[in-house]
Length: 201
View 1 (tube, one colour):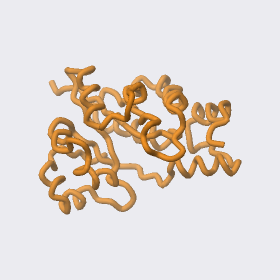
View 2: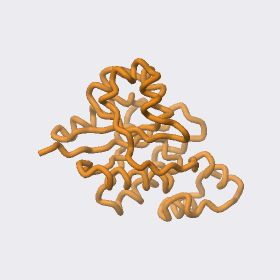
View 3: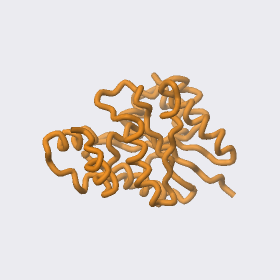
């Protein structure tokens, strides 16, 4: 019997959008071996302008994940003294789930920089990487034109029937600052949480 898979979905989730959750739902639906998706928000120590405190981003994810038995949110990076490297996060999750196969999901834009990541060789040897094609990107072309990726091409899995969304968290934050509605950009739980806590003003 094939090992069950846990997919690690990292990001800033600043705020989490409907597109994040629809992608996760799509992965669970398309890949029968996937048991659950673990959302892993980055630590606020991560060098990104305008990043909300850990607490808020964790709670926004949690209020959605608590309503889906296939979704979970982890504070594994939030409770660390520094921002973990991706391989460190994946190894910690693998230790917590020794009998599961761990996949990591990333966008094709990040894949182009994968060779520069910490212990990139080890990362691609140990874990499968589920790739979400962005904009006009084609995974096969990206791999073909990059010697590092080509060497590890068996580590990459393309998200099937990828639903592409041009919506970004920065666009949503800007709408909030302008006093405009963000309803239907985020799940209702996130929308209400942002309003109640007066975030991104």
